[in-house]
Length: 329
Image (tube, rainbow, N blue to C red; front, side, top):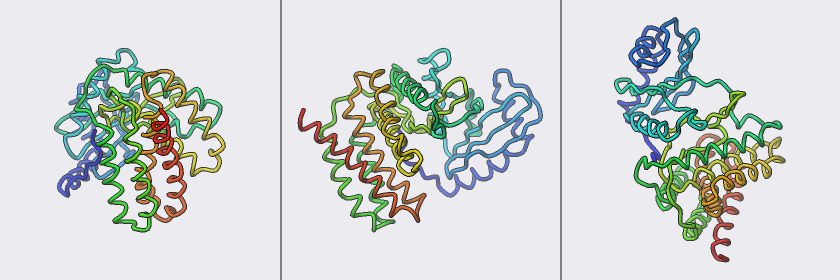
């Protein structure tokens, strides 16, 4: 499970140059030809950036009747994602149970090529469709976790807690005023860790959230395997719940729905995966909420003094629930 990667200056520079090059139609057509994609029909192509980060970018390549997502990395990590996707395809035949998997990998471009999927993110759907789609998302998660293969060495709860500690230390250095909020949470996280139930690892998504599910109008599709791993499947469920709770917490229009949406996904997932520990799901929800405090400080710098205390309340409550349940077992 790749928690954090920072490309060096050479990698960043090369990635920027590749981004410019791959927006040239002739270059993109040559790349698509070399991939030997099924049913590929050479035609005029238009490329547009969809997301740009320091270590990767995604382009949409639009042809007359086809569209592809081109995901390019600054290093060879795409090779690992490709191998993982092939293993998932082998263990999830047919429609891959809602997974959007790449069709090709080009090592010389460090590029994964996906079919383009049009739709609306589950995080943006707030009407009567929400409950059914949350249940579908839970089933897709459960199907992923039932995949019977070992993609890598296990990522343990202790490793996740250490990574969270490191993130919080970076936060304390950059935003010292947040230290009084972070320090009690780290103590609560360490205490709750001791009360986790034993768990068998499974292939996990690693960044599961409603913003990773796309509703096409006909099916729900799970995107982005960049955080794949082999860990307690409760991590994915807890991460999804934390991200859903975070989105509702900061939007007054959604706060009234939060408890019902959370219960819908949680109950549907645990019904599909009865061997997964509810206590562990709660733990990973709390852990994710703690980790997202750093994200808020970094991305919402002006608002963090108002937002972080709200997130901390829910993180503390989740971790205290784990410790209380463990002590009364």
